[in-house]
Amino acid sequence: MIKINENFLKLQDSYLFSTIAKKVSEFQKENPDAKIIKLGIGDVTRPIANSIISSMENAVKEMGNSETFRGYGPEQGYEFLRNKIVEFDYQKRGVDISPDEVFISDGAKCDCGNIVDIFSINNKIAITDPVYPVYLDTNVMSGRTGNYNSETGKYDKIIYIPATAENNFVPQLPKEVPDIIYLCYPNNPTGTTLSKEELTKWVEYARENSSIILFDAAYEAFITESDVPHSIYEIEGAKEVAIECRSFSKTAGFTGLRCAYMVVPKNLVGYTENGQEISLHKLWSRRHGTKFNGVSYPIQRAAEAVYSEEGQKEIRENIKYYLENAKTIKNGLQEAGFTVFGGVNSPYVWLKVPDGITSWEFFDKLLSKANVVGTPGVGFGPSGEGYFRLTGFGTKENTAEAVERIKKIWS
Ligand code: PLP
Image (cartoon, rainbow, N blue to C red):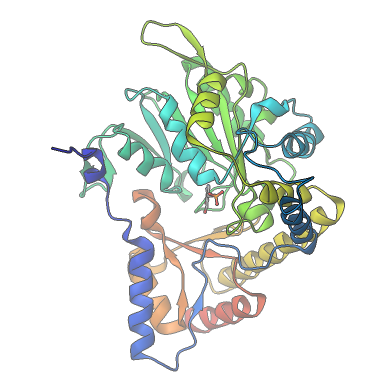
């Protein structure tokens, strides 16, 4: 008889976005004339830049020509792309990463989900709370958690590190030492960042305790402030304790094209049960080469074009557009009397729900009174209760109108 992986039964239904969709569709049915504005989206909306499209078109044509056709590519990614990543994302910031430490993939979601394959089932996991749900769910699937406790909203055996207004969104170093620590900065959903000084504390903590930090920098391109690190490797010693994920999804609008990368430094090690040091780069290389066929050639050429002069100019315009929207939301809500976080180095604005109501109650109020849709904070973890996420990924016009409606109701 076929047996299933029963860890999947511990997973909580990802009801967040389906519940939102259901509530919105019911409201629209009852109020057919309401012009609903969706500011809950975590997906980009602006089209891919021209220079990126034309590079992809050229690569597609190469595939139809017997002289330039390419079959299976290198599993770790084409060198032309890995070289550009190293030059622009690391060397230009004074960080020494070599191209063979970069693994091209089809998404940061897949990378942070798949990396758990190379770690022991007995590792203790720490996540900041609230956070991008993939870190937790992929560890539930692979059996690193106990059961879900519906009263606390937490899984047993996971270390939750709250990041809320009370600690200024700076998570405290946990007393119980984890083996694997997930850090996401700029953070989804709070839009907040860690300063170099704060991130240094985490790197030192990981070094002292032989832990690994999985650093998700999917929103790195939105950083505007100079003291915010773009890469964990800007911190001394991080190459011995950190793996970093990056993505072209939010940086260059690749959510539909799919391209990302992960850096696994060569001197990063893990240990066997009997204490033998093993290279994590070697393990990941084996995992990647066995289970992943690489990103298609045209998409890697498209990603390469992100680093061209024109590509950089064009993607910066889109990022600026989303950041302007985030600023409109942040300023408008502050004028309406809300307490608001994020939105400066991130497309995400994180607001404190007023009047002591829950984040789902605020969702209902915002939908029915302002016809605006956002995301309840509790969907990102128990410490997200009492907060709400709005995003800058809408159009400028809709964003401004949504803010005006909110101001009219709450001012
Ligand atoms: N990491 C974070 C923090 C995210 O918010 C997202 C997407 O929303 C991802 C990773 C996924 O990135 P990708 O599209 O490259 O899989």
